[in-house]
Picture 1 (cartoon, rainbow, N blue to C red):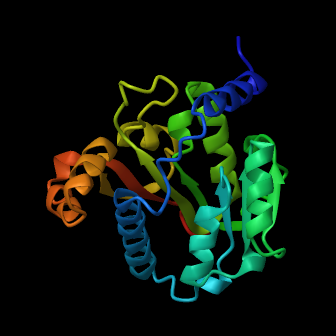
Picture 2: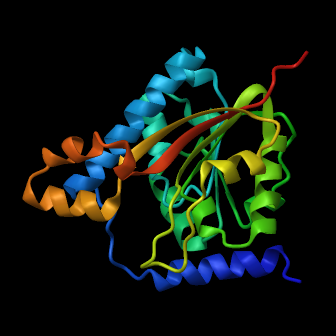
Length: 234
């Protein structure tokens, strides 16, 4: 039987196999349109939830990478001292530390093993982390930890793809039914986003204005933005 350490080592190996090619540069028109679409959806969600004072909310990102998502949150109005990130890979953690304000807390290592006070975080945020976890038990272990950290009335904010990529055996889509299994106590809101990346790259090579045209077809969207809310304290 494999343990948590086996999966964390496997994740590091999978990332190493991806090489240095950066398909996620904001200089690419498909990437900046994807990022801006997700940002707009998140801001609409925060408004819907009544999160008008973003600076007061405590946020922890699991798998913060080089800090790009946390920088986005700062731009939206979240406060540095209320932001934290956890990252497994030391080199990516070092990149995050180099670009983020010192007030942002960063942790290295296996996020599921972090000693975080239960109920101390308003939003636990993950973006394309669970699709890189191929061990079901490890997925559940991390989900349980994330749910434990969430304060009553807060929630897990989830952005990940839902379909398998036949060209990449190192990732696996996480359908909405699996998200519900991971967080069975949550009240679930979801929205399908993001034009399938191969299609997005192809149409943007013709012209970036084609991205929203193709993205208007829900069947071509590959990701889910999900809010998993914990019941408020009674």
